[in-house]
Amino acid sequence: MLLIDGKKTSEEIKSEIALRVSEIKQEGGKIPHLAAILVGNDGASQTYVGAKVKSCEQVGFESTLVRLEESVSEEELLKVVEDINENPAIDGLIVQLPLPKHISVEKVTNKIKPEKDVDGFTPANVGRMTLGWPAYVAATPYGIVELLKRYNVETSGKHCVVIGRSHIVGSPMSILMARNEYPGNCTVTLTHSRTQNLPEITKTADILIVAIGKPEFVTADMVKDGATVIDVGIHRIADASKKSGFKLIGDVKFDEVSEKASAITPVPGGVGPMTIASLLYNTLLAAEGKVYTK
Image (tube, rainbow, N blue to C red):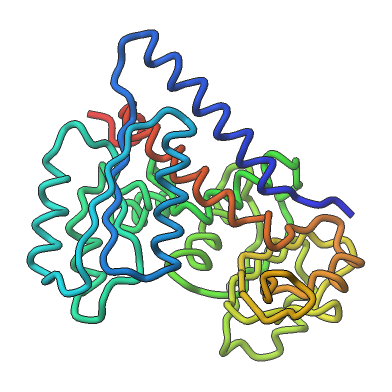
C-alpha cells in the first residue's frame, strides 16, 4: 500500500515556488503578493488565514491581511474587495469563509476580479476550468490532481467515483478527472448523499475521491481491492488517549480501507497541506500573468 504524503509533496511545491520567487528577484521582477480578508473572530478561520500568511513568508511572497469586525456591513466588505481589485500591487485575493450570515457569499465572490481569484471560486474561473481553458482551479481539487500526478497514479480509462458534490471540491473534481489530459481521461461517476446503492457504485471505483463531510463514512466493504483512495474529509473527535484530548480523522475509515487500497491519503497529512500549496501556486501564476493573458 502506497501512502500518498500530502505534507511532503506540499513542501516540495513550496520549495519550487520559493526557487521561482528567488529567480524573479534576481530578474528584478515583481514579487507575488497575496491579500486575505478575514471577517470576525472565528478560531478556525484565524488559524487557516494565519497558516496562509506564514506560507507566503516561507516562499518569499508579500502578503496583506485585512481584518474586519463581525459586524461589518456587506457594502463595506464589498468596498474593501473593490479596493484590492484595483490595487496593482496585489496579485491574488482570498476572502476566508465562512462569512457572517448577513453577508452574501455569492455577492462577495462575484465581486472578486477573476484575474485575482486565486481561490478559483468565481463563475469565470469555474467556467474556464470546465471548458479546459487556463484558469485558477480551486485549491483542494488542484491539490488532489497534483498528488495523483506526482505519485504517478494511472487515470486514463479508469473509473473515478467522487462522493460529494460541493462547488469547492466534488463538482470541480469530477470535471477535472474527466478532462482530456493527465491526470484525467477517467470515466467519472459523481455521487452524493441522495445516491441510491452507493456501496455498489463505490466498489467499482479504480479511483475513489471522498468529500462527503461525514467521519469515517467509507468503510472497507465499499472499496475495491487495489483502488486509489483520496480522503478529503477532516474531523476533530474526542480522544482521551491524546494529550490534546482529540484526534483528527477523515471521511474514510483509514485502518481498514488502507488494507484494501493500493494507494491512500492519510488524515491529517494528506489532501489538507496541498490546499495551501495550490493557493500559493495560483498566486504565482497570477503574478506572472500566466492565466489571464492579455
